[in-house]
Image (cartoon, rainbow, N blue to C red; front, side, top):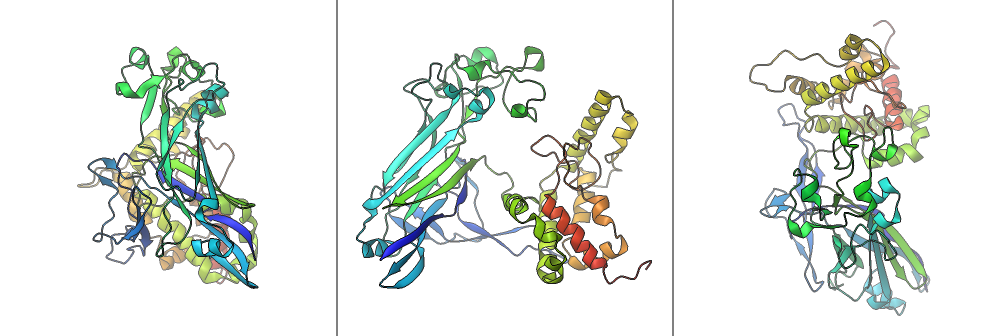
Length: 471
C-alpha cells in the first residue's frame, strides 16, 4: 500500500482583501441573460459556503436568498480560498484517486498530525523597486494538520537587515491561515487562507512629507531611514512603468517615494505527508469593484496562450470542433460586453487622445493625425451622459448573438483584422480597434492574446468558407 502522488487543489488561488470579518459568500456564474428582452448582464448564482469556526469546526451554510453580498457594514468581505489535498494511492491492490481524507490516512497508519503545512508569503513591491533585501517583507507559518487555531502571517523585514523597512518588534499583518478540523461530514484535508484587511502603512515622518495620505497613527511605524523612502523613479525604468505605481512626490521633486506599503502579498502553500510534498500558489488582490464582470482576457487565456497557442492555427481545430469553437468565440464576445459595462469609454477615449497627442509631440509627427486616431467627441444623446460608452454597449450587446456575428463576418470578411487590435510589441498609438482606448499593464494599448486573435481570424475564415465571392 502506498500513496503514489499528491497535489493541492486548486494549484493557484486568488484571495481578495477586505476589512469585514465575514468572508464573501460562495457563488458561481449562471447563464448570462442575453435574451432579446434580457438585461445583457452576468448572472451570479449563490452557492453553499463552508464556514470555519474559531476551533476549526467546519460546517456548510446554505445561500441566503438569491443575492450575493460583496460588502457589509464593515466594508468589503474578503475572499478566503481553501486548498485541498488530493492524491492517488493503492490499497489492497486497488488504485484510487481523489481528495485525501482521514480514512485514507488511517489506511496508511497516519493521522492529521502527520500532515505538515507551510505557508510562505511576501510583499516585494518596495524590494522590486529598490532591489534591496532590507525592503523585503516576508511572513512564514508552519502548522500541523491537527492544529486548528487561526495563525497570523506577520510581515517583517529580514533579521539581518541593516536598514529594515519594518522596524524590529513591528510587523505588517499579511493575513492568516487555519486548518479546518476534519469530521465525518467533511473528512478532507484542507487549509484556508484569509487575506489582510486592505490597509496602507507609512513611515513615521509621513505627515511631514505630505498631507495627501492622512493615515492613522497606528499605521505609521515604518522606518524613514529605509531605502524605500529614498527611491526615485527613473524614466523608462520597467520597474515603475506605467507611471503611478507608487506614491511619491511630484516630478519636479524627482518622484521620491513616500515609503507607503500595503498589505497585499503572494506566495507558496506547501503540504508534506511522509515523503510526498505538494505546492500551490496564493495571490492576494485588491477588492474587485466589478466582481460580476469577467475580463475579456483572463489568466486562463494567458496560460492557454503559452501552452496552446499553436493549436488554433491547425485547420482541423475548427473543422473538427465547429460548435465548440463557436462557443469559445461567443464566450469571448460575452466577456467583451461585460468589460464594456465596467469601462467609462468616454473618459478612456479622452485619456487615449491625450496620450496620442503627447506621443506625436515627442516624435514630431502631426498632432491632427494623432488626434484623429481615436473617436471624436460624440454627438450627445438625449438623456445619456456618456454617449460614447452607451453607443459602445449597444453595439457589443449584439455580438454575443452568434447569428448576428456570423452575418457580420460574411458581409465584412476583414472585420476581425480591421476592428480587433492584434498583439503587438510596444504599440504606442491608441485607435478605434477593440479593445477601445484601454491601457494594458505595460502602459501600451491593450490587446487580446495571440491565441485569441488567431482563433478569431481562423473562425472568421471558416465562416466565410462557404460564401460565394462577391456576394
